[in-house]
Image 1 (cartoon, rainbow, N blue to C red):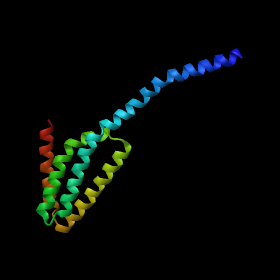
Image 2 (image 1 turned 45 degrees about the vertical axis):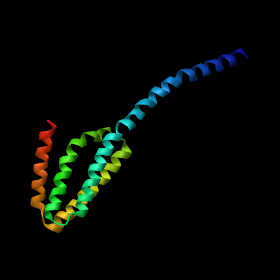
Image 3 (image 1 turned 180 degrees about the horizontal axis):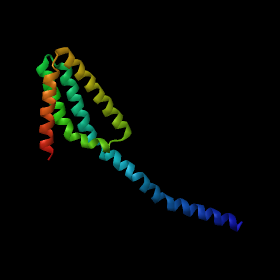
Image 4 (image 1 turned 90 degrees about the horizontal axis):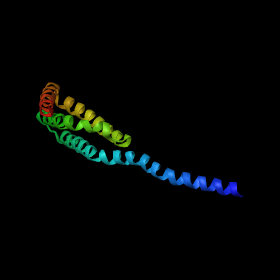
Length: 132
């Protein structure tokens, strides 16, 4: 009878000791989730704005402007990508794929590859200069 009581007491003590340890193990994952929400929202809004701009583009100049704005705003917020959860990364990747497909379609539709490349290059140089 005493051994049974001793085993129960030890098991109870182990349960009590593991509760703080479990909280510590859960905390970083929770913090990571909340830390990545702001960056995720910035990246998602940039991609959604680009998709909207490309969908509404009616000529080569508008396509070039949409891609210029995309590159200029996306480069500074891409630093948040590594902080995202796997689910958020999948959402961002899907939006980026949509932007790529739509930009290629609009570029081909209006035959403006050269203009888009110049706009992307200009935006890249400006974004890099502003990040320094």
